[in-house]
Length: 411
Ligand SMILES: Cc1cc2nc3c(=O)[nH]c(=O)nc-3n(C[C@H](O)[C@H](O)[C@H](O)COP(=O)(O)OP(=O)(O)OC[C@H]3O[C@@H](n4cnc5c(N)ncnc54)[C@H](O)[C@@H]3O)c2cc1C
Ligand code: HEM
Image (cartoon, rainbow, N blue to C red; front, side, top):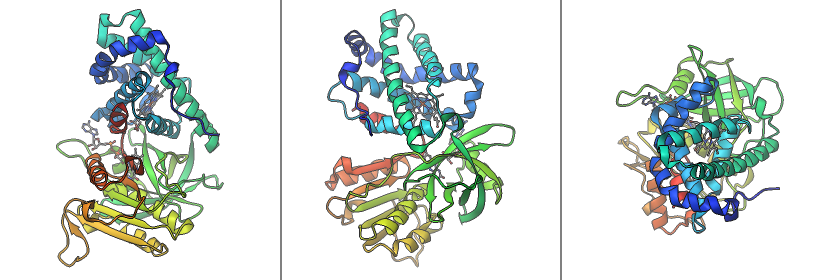
């Protein structure tokens, strides 16, 4: 059974609704200051949570922005009957939490520190009434997430206290100078979990020096049957920022036979078999979502039209390209377009520059799956909207905290 994630207006009490309406703008205006205080408070009391939260996203402030954006968008959703659907945001957070083994009892910790941070930032403006109203918003949000997460844990047969399984790296493949694939096999010898193409896993890595850190990687192939593959691009620091910790570690240190803790597959960036032709528009590491979808269509619906469009720096940086084309030979109607910032003079087929879908013929009823950096996906989306593709036909995956969804949901 699937439950609707839509929250009827009546969820918020009439008294709190009036207070939230009166204070939403001031809370929204201070939201990042609030979440900026919240995390250090919480980590000071529960340092073990540093091993569950992505410290890269803490350093860049992206997780803080994502949390602030989500709470504000949720409050707007509660008080504005015309606010866009919140379903996608709720599902995205719940899947992310489940991949990290988040448990209901931890909501008390987060709630305590988040509401205390509201008090610290807004000071005397937080009367007992205001505190109660925002407490109610928090716990409504929490209750819906906890319910959805319970459903996802049950569906995946995962005990949240043991949310990861140990896998052995059975093969390391050098895809490009900056991209490797790791083929993983469960150490317990039991079956693979069900993986829907486009889903990701959280991989927990024990780093030199004792830190443990999770990162998400799309399951880039399940063609091996008893094994799953992830494909990792090395993240280099720019403008003085440090190199990515986990991707660098995986590139520099992981070898055949090593062990990794891996969550059950998560995420709703998945293809529906009943929908129409597909356009898969990717850039850079976003290609990892393309291969599993192409594999899946080749296996289960070879008559379904698939168009892939990929942008990269050069052909040499375009990972998994040959594998995608090889698998796609089993699809009746398959077209591939590529854009490179620098095109090799001998390459007559690729286009120069950034992806431009405006001239690409698209079938009626096309369903779009796009994955890549946010500016790239914004560009793809606006070009497609201009071409008349309805917004509901455009799905996207962000390789970091989703700073877009909450903005869209907040209207
Ligand atoms: C759903 C999902 C699916 C994903 N799928 C894939 C995939 O298939 N393949 C893939 O390669 N990646 C994927 N990712 C991205 C992946 O999870 C990691 O984010 C990526 O590998 C970088 O992790 P890292 O530890 O190397 O970098 P981090 O150490 O987390 O650093 C990330 C960025 O933050 C910057 N930074 C870190 N610390 C600081 C600081 N103190 N000051 C300033 N800047 C700083 C770094 O320079 C870097 O640019 C996915 C992410 C998500 C959410
Ligand atoms: C109502 C309460 C909560 C809200 C609104 C919330 C919201 C969010 C949001 C918006 C994200 C980013 C999702 C994305 O990747 O796009 C996120 C991620 C995350 N949440 Fe929560 N969360 C809540 C409770 C909790 C609790 C109780 C925990 C447990 C300690 C938790 C731990 C995490 C972790 C570890 C991440 C991943 C962080 C990262 O990758 O940087 N959250 N949450």
